[in-house]
Figure 1 (cartoon, rainbow, N blue to C red):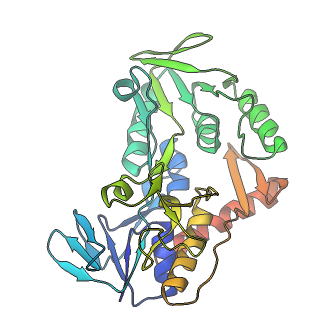
Figure 2 (tube, one colour):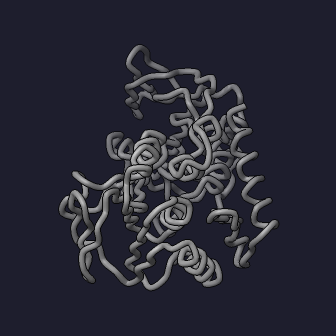
Length: 325
């Protein structure tokens, strides 16, 4: 029997390859994380980003005895032949003074709901982090918004064209874009940077993604809480255990953390758990962002925008939604 722990993009994609597998999770709701930004900004309602699904084993406690090939839940013990771990990621708030007390993260649907509720009463909003999450937040929140980016450009992992487009669109919408700026402290009503202090009624950290703490709790070798896997996604610790999605990475190459990569790794992990012996080659085909009614981003190494980019974003949503059906 093949067991899957974690029912996000990777876990549900693995299940699609083998409906006889047993799916185990702490929740029975599939949250499409890339779209919680739209929910946080008030562009869509919760039903658009979260859907109920039938979980085989729902439990608040999950432990694994790798030696005896046994999953220990709150109410039962489950024997497995092969195990796929797809337990996602966590967002770490930076070790800045005041961050834990006064900053908000955007990792879960609950985080997004808190931000959504606070936006209408926040006269000034500061977003720390100029990656895709930070850019989409800054571009879709209505109000007085500042985005702080430590590097010299927004979207540093994307094409220069996407970076320049993001900066241009944000500035058109009145967002204060601060590049090469380091946040050093978060206060109740401001953010201190190396260029001065900025008033903030709501401070959001949009970055700091790490693997899952579950990986550490299970005692697996890891890098930044991401279990280290071989090219076939099997654990370096146990050959009958596979890692998929954001919780897994190679020793010599970082596997990108994205829904697209998570889905492909989930499929590969399951096929290998069934004996196919495939090598996983992570590739992120498209990264599309939305600012207002403007869609743009990268398709492979090329820049795309307009209707083409909008269609890609829509297709990604449909593909994600189908996972829970």
